[in-house]
Every structure is written in C-alpha cells, then in structure tokens.
Length: 463
Image (cartoon, rainbow, N blue to C red; front, side):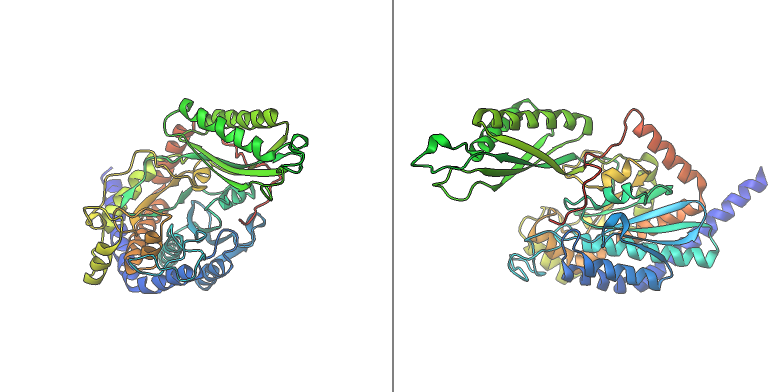
C-alpha cells in the first residue's frame, strides 16, 4: 500500500513538473498563435465559406505532425487532425466562422473595416486559434514523454446557424472519442456547469394566387395574409409558453409589389427553450399557427427545418477538472493601453476587473444556442469561457468584434489554450478522470434520446 502511495505521489509530482514546463513553453509560443487568431479575424469568413481560415489551421496542424481528414461530412471547411494512437481518444474543438454584417476595426466607436462585411463578433477567430495552440502543445508533450493515446483537433465550421458539428456527428467523426474539450469567448473566466437553449429554426413558406390588388382583389389569395395571420397567432402563443422560451422571426419575402396580391411569402422563425422535449411541443404549436394562417387565407403552407441545436448537456466531472486548471492558469491584466481601450467601449460593466479573476463555475442556463450542445449529447464534453471580451460586452456586437481583434482578446485566448492543454494532460495520464467524465455523461443523459431535427437528407447550406 505504501509503495502504491509513493508511486502515486511521484506521478503527481512529475505531472506537476510537466505542467509547469508546458505553461512556460506556451508563454514563449503565445505570440505566434495570437498572429493566427488575428489572421482569421482579418479573413472574417461566414459559415461554410471559411476557406482561408480552415486552410490556415490545417497548415499549422500538418506542420506539427497531425494527420488530416478533410471534407468531413461533405463540408469543404470541416476537418479533423489526429496524432497518436490507442486510448484514450481526447478531442479538442475549434470554430472559425464569422457573423454577417459585423465588420469592425479595433476601435471604440462603430467603424466597419468594410461596410456590410462579416466580422468576428463572437470571437471564433480566438476559439479556433486557442484550441489549435493547445492541441499542438499537448502533442509535443505526448511525444516527449511517450504518452499513449490519441489526440484529435476538430475543425468545425458554421456554428452560427449552419450546424457544422451536426453533420460531422452524422459522418461518424465523434464515434471513437472518449472526451471532448471546448471553450468559448466570454466576458469572464469560468468553467461551465450550466446549459444552453435548445433551438429549432425553420422557413415557413406560403403559396397563394396573384391578382391585381385594385381591379380584381377577390380573385387573389394573399400569401402575405397567411403569413401575417400566422405571426398574429404566434404572438398570442407567447403568453402560453414555458419560462425562458424565445421566439423570433423575420419576413424574408413579403411579395413583389403593393398592387399585386402576393402569391408567395416566406418567414424565417427560430424558437428556443432550455429543454429540447419541451421545445418539440412548442414547435408543434407554432406549426399549428402556420396551418391556421394558411386555412384562414386559403393559401398553402410548407415548413422546412433549416437548423436545430440541442441544449448543452453539462458534465460535472469535466466541469470540475476545467475549473481546477483554469484556476491554476489564472486571469490576466490589461496594459495601460488596453485599460484605456476598455474604458471607452460603450456597454461595459461597472467593474472592469473580472478578467483578473476566476469566477465560480457557471450553473445557470445560458440564453444562447450552439451546435456544441449536440456534441455534448453524443460524447462527454467539457466547456468553459475566458474573458476575451471586456466585462459587460456581449457577443454578436461590434464591440465584441473589436475585442476579438485586440490584445485583450488574445490574452484571454492564451488563458483558454493553457486551460485546455492542462486538462488534456490530466485526461491522458489519469484514467479515473476519463471514467468520471463518462459516468457523469451517462447520469445526465439518462432518460433522453438524442436525435437531431435536421432532416437526414438535408445537406449543409451556406447562408
């Protein structure tokens, strides 16, 4: 017994030394990966169009000795990069798609680099680069120390509405993985033991009969009337939905001209709820609103699901592991120039110091949705956030895009990369950590069956 205890203590000491060495190495190499993140920020490519971004990440991984699999799930910008062999198989996910219309310079006022162009207002340039940084450093550590196991980087496109990870799941890209680690840019540093909102998004198309709106209005059947009756019914429905339900929509086609009874109209609608089974019921009721619109206007309605994400399944063991390593890494400080930049941004928090601290693990339900949620239902997944945005700044804003291209964003990115790397080291060297992650996964998933709402025959589509 004493011998086993001494061996365990020796192993822990060696691991601590390895971690200290790895952190020093990452401090030395951080500038390069900051440059990678900035290049992706400059590319600012939207979902399924991230050609330059994906190529840059692939080239870095190939140069580091990873074996690449491209065009995963039939998506040219989806790939995996694998190093090593055997168990365990640990995955690290990266994203790199930008948002339309949010081009922004690193400035404290609205200043698009190109009017109407995309911008990295969700910080995915940092997400992809930090995961890259971690994967390459862990690979080097594994090779130096002859650590058994398989390390895999997942290049996942089109998180912003395209659901790239879902098509990768369907292609079997995650079927042999023991644990997946990921992170997301935020305005504080915290492990995530909370969830997110499940989401279903679809197009509701109404088909009517055109006619001259003044000469023969009685001969027409307005597709726009059907759409508007639907939206009126949806507004009444809001009163009778569970807490945290979100329903939002835009009219993408309302007709050709005001003097023509519209023969075609289209609505894009998204609904969200913390539970996918609850959302299923809400979605059925939304479809009834659409059917009512078609019935009342004597038009025809078709619905097509365009995207759907499951709510994230928390993993208690991985949340605790990431929290420990995030606390070891710690926060960071602003330079005087970064402090001045932060103070001038509109929308900041009263307290600008949260980037220096590690917050308690987040346990509440976040109000966004991500296809990382789908991955969390098929493989144990751990996630966390780091303060790449100035405290108070929310994603999908020009302020977030400015932060994502700044030194503040890159400092938060390094915190994320280090946390990912240390956590992967623990999973490769301690089988109990992997077993605990799997046990937590099975406990949380019990009683549910994962099935994506995206039709099996639907191909990935660039928006």
